[in-house]
Length: 282
Length: 209
Image (cartoon, rainbow over all chains, first blue to last red; front, side, top):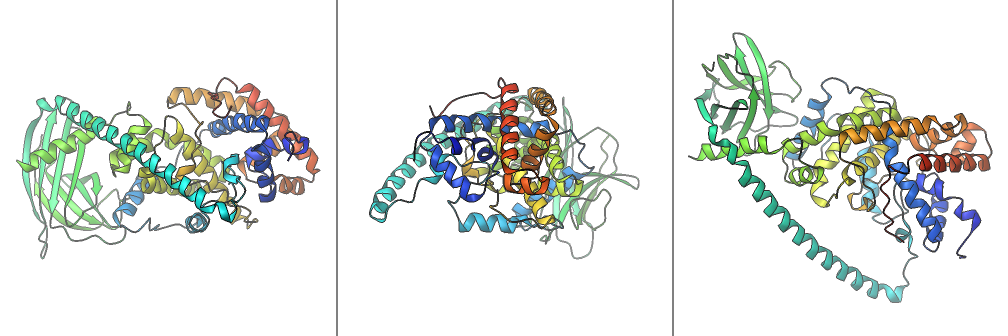
């Protein structure tokens, strides 16, 4: 292919936008592999596209979206199975996308990427092993580098952890209560600790021997004054154990309770009470 | 006392993460299934990403599902790649666009075409570097909105169909009843103009030459 091909060079914009047919995408990629000018253009246009999402008109997210999304995401991890997606009413994209990714690990460059290297013509059979061992060598090298980075990360995290313990000295435990089972046949138990420091008042709750959760269920913690429960967050148990940390404005609550909820979106208790204890925090 | 150690650990988790943690730190923690870090990242980008998804799907429920899918993928895959500075947001935008356009295609029963799915973490571009400074991002956003508004109506139309709705040039020609060459010409001019007006925002590093 010639170095400079007017007709193909004119596709740089559409290629970067992914607005060509699959065949044209391939043709351009093959051309760009040999045309420095086009590679540079594509690079420049990508910078533009990277920034284009920022041009969107700002819109307020619907209320409660954060809680819905975070609780679904977190529970997907807990279920072990890769993202059991509970209520996808409109978007059935996950299966397709994943299937495609699995079946065709290296395919036509999708819209967002596709620099020439993805379209190197298929190596001839005889060269196969050569490419393979080269690939393996590169992989080993990358692994070594990656391991090194991970080590760096670990020591960085350790440092952070060490430095983080500093300000904790002013911590004062205000109250610690044992949580008792709130009904017949429940063997769960736990502790609620309320601590104060210069940044505020914090509740730390730990529980064990909790009944196992199924589906979208979560445990939810409530601080109660009279008959008014205030949501103190949800947690998911693992092997019957669970914990929760919550910061709140010091206020007089008289009871702390843990309920088993059908999902993490409730603002008032709907499920069964599992644990409860009186508190006198004030 | 054991519970005291747990308590310290939990409190640490709560304090050590603050707004100054950069994306890379957050991703490292998310890879270890740190839900605080996920929440912090969510808070940081909720609005820009939601606005972008909404811009494409024009429906709040669908935009929310796009967000949910994006964060699911992030939660599942955070450990698989080293997101350099500024790359995370680029990746999130790319995945958001693909999910949103896939939604449009499904809804309108459009041709499946090549799935524009670049949710593959390994394929984050080397060069991309959006700033992590939220104020700067906002300023960049205004600049780009202005640049888009500076395009002619015809150019805006083709850019909208291609960028926000994911049509190919052939589809645009057909739907808008304009010759293929005209579509191409408008896109070229539009991209050149955008590039010109945004030049100082793109941190250009010519990795290839």
